[in-house]
Length: 489
Ligand code: GLN
Image 1 (cartoon, rainbow, N blue to C red):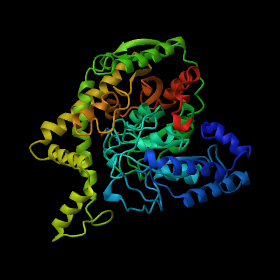
Image 2: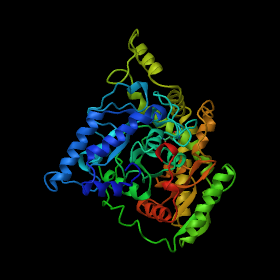
Image 3: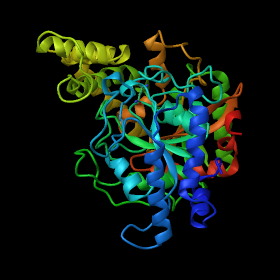
Image 4: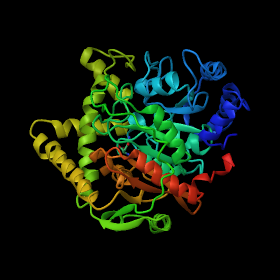
């Protein structure tokens, strides 16, 4: 049961082979057994989960009624702890919110649980305020990669990635500001999708860099991601950047043959900077696509080398503004001892935030300050436009862009923690996609020394359906995505 796809689990629930309570118990028991090693979940609440499962069972049994069962009703999933969920502790990986119990549901939570009837298995560990590529910045300690527990799972959605890889959950949500769905998916052998900016509501998703943040699914396969994405999307008037577009069914186009698909290979992604064996796995995946009827064309993203520097101006600038709300006054942590009000702010923020978050707030405040704004922030915004234009040009001659997701496989815990620049370079292939607001995916495409490698797919605006189709056809021809680490075998 633990290795079944979402479609198979839905069939088992519909056929009454298993109840949602039984299925959820199976995963809750695995969490109890394996989480002490992996540290993938920060909050588990068996009673709450089982109450949701009982509701789901009632919906399935009723067949019709006020809330008829949907295709995923009763299936348990894990939620990244960046999504506010009513009555659940919502920490965002920070001491600042370690005791914060959300009084309301994020739109994603509302849609997935209240509407679609999915059961929450709990909240997953993450880099503090989603800042990181290794999950080592979490106040709750690092997450371990189920493929090799001396290594990182990637970040910032590392808890979600480790949970699904070790089958502590059949699927999970993540968020991606600069790669945080795709990079951990690559390092843990999962399929992950970052949708076009504005497709998934950010309401109730704790803000890091608002113009880049986007939630999305992380699961074993593209088909599972399509099913999950169907429950997550839609216009939301509570998010001013939510896009009002007709709702799509992402499952419908999955089977389309790939004949005539034009794959763009950016020459900047195939030069130096990537581990040679990782690159070999990526090239083998592209050869597989050619067998499936696709052709390749070289494209260029001439400004992509500027994406990391531009991102590390824009994202901290937005973060410094977003995180100013954590001041000890309204909610969250407050320093126990202080003098006047200013001292309370200062001590609260000094004690409540970790080193990486402080570094970003300082950078952000600096680049936005009078005298430096034009030189850094404005310049970064100009580069952002150039990067987006590069993609517009590239998509004139191809349908999807492919390349590596991450320049290396999972690295050792502690290996890059002391060197922020090395850490920032983990995202060289993913960040441009966020700056342009495009959809991107990572798909398992091989192993190097027993560690998973991810193939990145980048689509044009609103092409998530096409990306899922392109990933699904590959997954029908290969079995990389079905491989499991020993703990889940
Ligand atoms: N690793 C990048 C960062 O540290 C991206 C994080 C993310 O996508 N949330 O900012």
